[in-house]
Structure formats: C-alpha cells, structure tokens
Length: 165
Picture 1 (spheres, rainbow, N blue to C red):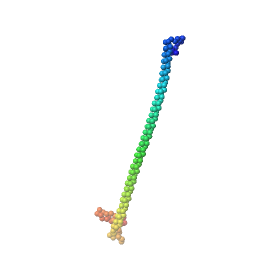
Picture 2 (cartoon, helix red, strand yellow):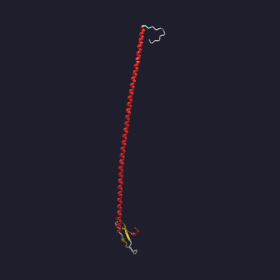
Picture 3 (cartoon, helix red, strand yellow):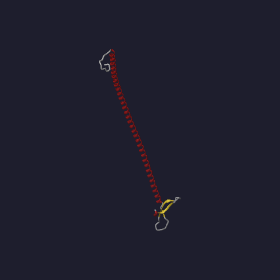
C-alpha cells in the first residue's frame, strides 16, 4: 500500500498514511500519464499514417502526371517524325517528278535531234541523188555515174564513182 516491503506488522501512523496517499496519487498520475502517452502515441501514429497516405497520394499523382507528360511527349515526337517523313516523301516525289520531266525532255530533245538528223540525211541523199554526173571517161560502152559524197574546203562536191558507194 505504501510501496515499501515490510515483513513485520504494519502500523499506520498519520505520516505513513500521508505517504500512502501521496504514493497512490503518484501512482494514479503515472497511470494517467501512461494513458495520455498512449493516447498521444495513437494520435501521433494516426497523424503519421494520414501524412504517409497524403505523401503516397501525392507521389501517385506525380507519377501519373509524369507518365502522362512522357506519353504526350512521345506522341508529339511521333507526330513530328510522321510530319518529317511526309515532308521528305513529298520532297522525294517532287524530285522524282522533276527527274522524270527532265528525262522526258531529254528523250524529246534526242528524238527531235534524231528526227532532224534523219531529215538532214534524207535531204542530203536527195541532194546527192541530184548531183549524179556522168563520167567523161570512155572506158566502156556505158557511161559510169558518179556521186558527190561531201564537199571540199572550197565548197565543191567531191565526186566518187557510184560503184564505190
């Protein structure tokens, strides 16, 4: 009752009674302090748990926001790549069309050149047919025809016998 071990008979003097009352009051204060400490601990733990939940929620939101930003960045880059590819393809098609136009123009020029050469050759053959002259050599009974193939530096026709052409 007093908080002391006593093997013999217990006598309660007024001093001992006051000590016992003080001891009981101290014991009750300690119990009350323990109860208050337990209540405070529970409150602190509840606050810590709540704080931890809030931090966890914030971290989740941050992670989701980062994920969304990364996804939107990825989509933006994919769009940019697609636009670049489309632009390159359009430029390639444009260059291809220009090359085809140049080839067609070259083929046309070549055809025109060949046609003009053929026309010139035809005109020359007509002219050369006109320039057949009779030979004044008396080698046989029939006069031999000669053909002008080219002209010399003075513009005169170079005549060769028809049998050599």
